[in-house]
Length: 213
Image (cartoon, rainbow, N blue to C red; front, side):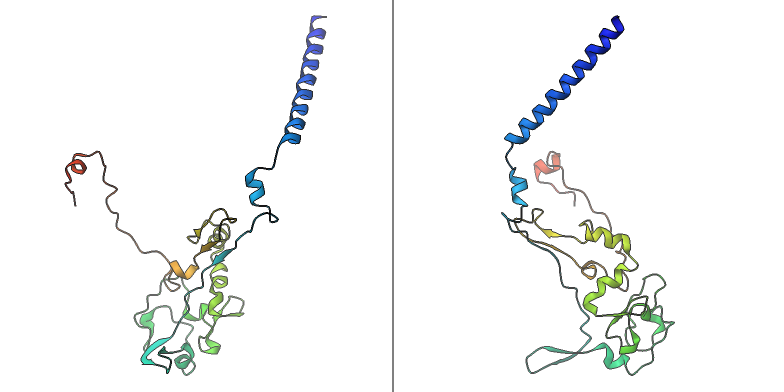
């Protein structure tokens, strides 16, 4: 008898709590107004600015030291020299070259020059692993075929050094291209020497104006 009464009371109490919770939610939903955050991202009430990628630095060729009639520096394009020379599939280091680019640092895995450059058109374009050619302005597609995790992070904003607005209703956002931070021939960051941390403003040196440097 006692157990039956206890279970009956428990079920009734649970039903009452559930009914009260549901009614409370319904009252809350009916009385709630759209929050400013929701209204801000509504395309009908606010403008959404784009997330853009900065234009990549493009190869300009070898400066000739002369200018054109408009005062612009004249450079030799890649194909000017490469179209007259046969490309070697065995060039891994600048030390393998007997002319041009001897000072170029190459440290990009086991890639050779023609792993990324299209030798068929005098190095005027890039080449994907499947043989398709790309313009230099599309070099990020070339990077992404091997650096998938980094490219995925880039697409989600965790890579690329973005600047601008988190709230795209207030303004746009701009992120770097791969080549703004990485040398394509030697993409790994160089080693950095650590420096002293911020000076403690409560230290005796800070109060007296002395310097530890």
